[in-house]
Image (cartoon, rainbow, N blue to C red):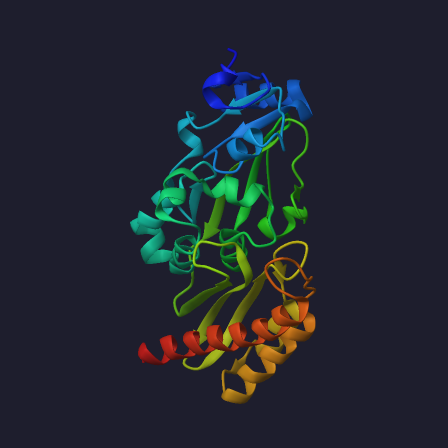
Length: 298
């Protein structure tokens, strides 16, 4: 069907599609290729269309395909539909109790009004280097499950991003869901975001997920946001911290190594030098939180 552009203030015509199944959605996206845009929450797509920054000839609404939304437990993993609203993730008992790092990151995204509309898949597929959910999900070993003409394929979420605004998605493909392993006993996490205001995109942010044994990091993942073209996992920092007691010296060393390892730019939200200094402080604060949380569990 055609949309009345006078009602929407979108100054170009387009065809609206509401497929009822994954197979139908794939067929539409494959058929229309670059002329099609997916409608999820609409918090990014609609403003861009109103500003004529995007002019899709076809808008494909996937919000009415039941299996693409919701948080559910499976035998060995937790599955989150890509079209699950951020507010539903925020309120999910499964996420709150078993994925607190993701819960913390989602709370940092925009306002309640935004989270009532925006979806986790939209936050990821915009491929912003500052996407808050992406850092936490990477730190939690999330996999991206992609539907397409050849069926479904799964990749590590870390490999999903290829640059600012760019992903591995090909013609006819879309992100269908995310799967995460159950965190092991002793796992602790911390997410910290620094922005100009509480509702702004991050100037710099960090997600750390660690399996702790007393005060020692048995394993750890460190992911930074807004400091590189994509969410940045710092394996060299992880290697330095693994099997190491989180002493004051170890935490300070990790902060210095993070600031030396990131690839920030200067933009309207902050200078490259500011991001380097901030990244050191955020790393030390996140690791200190994890250490204190681990001590409380003794």
